[in-house]
Image (cartoon, rainbow, N blue to C red):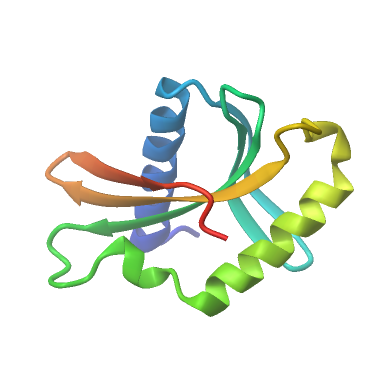
Length: 123
């Protein structure tokens, strides 16, 4: 059973995938779970870098609360551990010259659209 919050999160992830696709990224997977946690999007950028993407979405009517507020150092540490595990588990996805990185997409819904801020290589 999905909740309004989970549906909003899915909507944000779809918008994030569309944004990345427009930027030339290839989406390899969504909601990838491993024993340490989950990665929202796994993609490759135009240069071949493997990119693990954390998506955070809020509605503009949530006063004073930004998607960036959801990215604590503990959350980033757990995400890094999960990404390291995945990079080691699937070495065939790595371009040996480009490696991998963790990005964050912070989405704020304004009306029917999302404002997207892309933070690269956050950890």
